[in-house]
Length: 211
Length: 188
Image 1: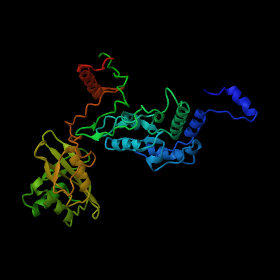
Image 2: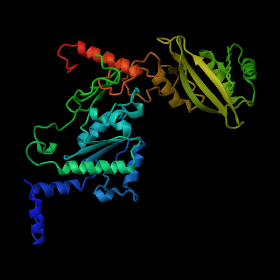
Image 3: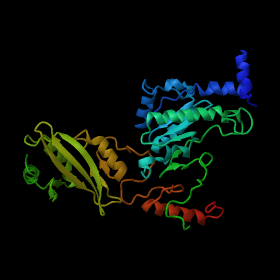
Image 4: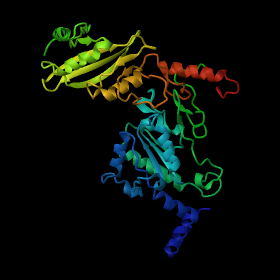
């Protein structure tokens, strides 16, 4: 589908600009990812630093942090997600308009991190919502968040508008709303969304290979 | 500042039968504490706050202890006016299951309010006379008390890529339980 690169350059020299709808559409999308203004813990401080003059996230078209989920395209889960906060995070994600993407920033958001065995910390937000980019670190440096942005931009750029691998908002069969967990007597119910977080492939820990 | 023995005798001079007990601390810090009888605790606390010589007007910390036979609340008191402290108070419940009430010291020191709510949340001590005894950190409807030693986390050990020690044990148990169920995917 893509235009031959050599031909494109040759035509460009003649003053003719050739592109595809897909390329143009994704170019527009990937250069205006507006994140939601939303921070959960210390990672949020690094996220704020990333938007400021030294690291300048505005270079990627993502300087406009929206205070409302309705106007945001990207949720940066920056920090520890406690079990008490998790339903609100999922609810905010549901309130965002498609197309929407998620970056899980830092050790806590991707796995629970140093608080993993705590009684009140969720073992990774990817149990409830689909995460596009995970960044490890405690907290990740602003460069890491910028790297995550660039990874996300590459991902958006590579999404075809039709057929296999098209984004969720162009696929009517895909899951649109994600169930919000409720507070149970001992834990959140359900403990994970199996549609988003299927049974993990790595089942055994180190030294646990006998069974 | 007065020693704990002097404080004890000062309390007993004003409130005979208060039954204050000294719990000594043999570590280098030597921070001995006073164990109060729950039924007299409010009167003793009021005395400690209002006594001209002690003036313990500031409660800096309240916490809980989980003993094998009972639960305990510990309070650290200072005096901002006299610049001394800490004086440590302790109160024990009768047992760990059904008699877990202790008098709230929130009417004496406002700063105990949230800390007693936290103790109630995490240890399950019920403070009678507390103005607003709700869970502080966990949600309403949560049944357990996570800081108790007999607390058992929910069984969410299905994915432990770097398990060791206790986690490895729970993870193995979880895998065994899943493998026991018919139609499970374990071992796939």
